[in-house]
Amino acid sequence: MYIVHISSELAPVAKVGGLADVVFGLSRELEVRGNDVEIILPKYDCLWYGEIWGLDNSFGDLWVPWFDGSIHCSVYSGMVHGRKCFFIEPHSSDNFFNRNKFYGEHDDIMRFAFFSRAAIEFLLKSGKRPNIIHCHDWQTGLVPVLLWEIYHNLGMQDQRVVYTIHNFQHQGIHGEPVLNATGLGRPDYYFDRNRLGDDNNPDAINLMKGGIVYSSFVTTVSPKHAWEARYSDQGQGLGHTLAVHDGKFGGVLNGVDYDIWNPEISRFLPHHYDVWNLGGKYANKDALRGRLMLRHEYSPIISYVGRLDHQKGLHLVRHALFYALQRGAQFVLLGSSPDPAVNDEFYHLKNHLNENPDVHIELGFNEQLAHLIYAGSDMVVVPSIFEPCGLTQMIGLRYGSVPIVRAVGGLADTVFDRDYADMPYENRNGYVFHNADFDGIESAMDRAIGLWYDFPREFRRLLSNGMAYDYSWNYPAEHYLAIYHHACA
Ligand code: ADP
Image (cartoon, rainbow, N blue to C red; front, side, top):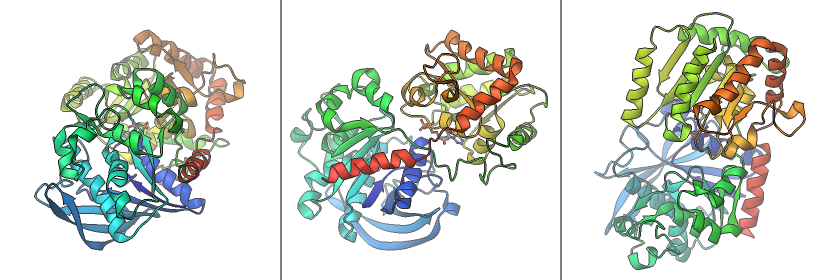
């Protein structure tokens, strides 16, 4: 099959969170299975250019319709760790992708509406006719709308769109201008609630809703989250739309790219190890302490790696830090937020704890340090309020760090409580709690820290159970291929 991903992120060159990992890992696995895969991205000024090979202007003269005129673009091609990518660079005073950041601009909706139109115009003009166009999140929700309403009549009637929702929190809510800009026009038609009209705001259209309504198949990133989105408030207002389109909606658990997230070969680890030989893990723990100036003593390290977003249960992350200290554990946090107020709050915490030899707070994005933290930790906490899939707990499992998670979304699909899960002991791999409050997280941390101190052999057994899990892309890629074939049938 010929598959084109249209995405706002790709690891490692444009990574904010899990979306970037998913587009890379899924593409790789699809290629391994003999499919042709290409990825279209914006040419951000803040791409990690050192990780792109052979960047070259491959389509110099793309004119993308925009409002009453058009914007001239160049399209660059390049390889990102073996993946064939196209980067769209508009030449206009809007400077859509020269903001030194990926998201968080006042005109984000216009920026990615332009990207959506440009990506599909590029497919048309370059003669590319993939079987499947795979789009992701609100940023590319307009692609299936444009395909069906405009490009269908221009020779792209055979293309099918699979649309994956990685996070229902951001849906791309906007007004009439985005319709005028992208050439869709006809507000009466698109504001209809059977099309893009937002269910909560009659004066708005919803790009993610457009993605759901117009795609051949819609997925979210875990079976449990598919259920939550459909039947609880976690669809964030899109539950009704999902109900209407129930027959083409399902959950596919994300995988982890074991070529990158692998303690046996990771280029970011000073010591390699596997489940049979954990010496390297403990050497990494020493290295982590050395690098972060934590004191060397007999105690577990508990860590949090992730975006600092309300979604992640930040009050519980904070509480986990203090509870860890109280229980004689060390705590490492690596995270960042686009919201200055949240960053300030954690800077304040960092300053407050600066002299404490048992805590390190690292604010920023650091892929290399993330690997060392996963490898050097004994446990990772993921106390999310909601979590569509979550990669950190799966990476933690692979690196032998026991996950302590709240039972939501993909966390509930991948972590099984050592003491309470209804399954054989050798399949249990972590600790799970339910209530998003201090008692909840303490109940799980208490058991984890207790096992580490009092029954170290049992703790190692639990950690080995986790390392034996296969959360690679192997099975999810098969699942996506089945969906692609279904969409094309
Ligand atoms: P989300 O997609 O909600 O951000 P996921 O758990 O699905 O969360 O994916 C998070 C990915 O981003 C993981 O690969 C994690 O290691 C990485 N990550 C998040 N924050 C940081 C950071 N500050 N530095 C390095 N890697 C990070």
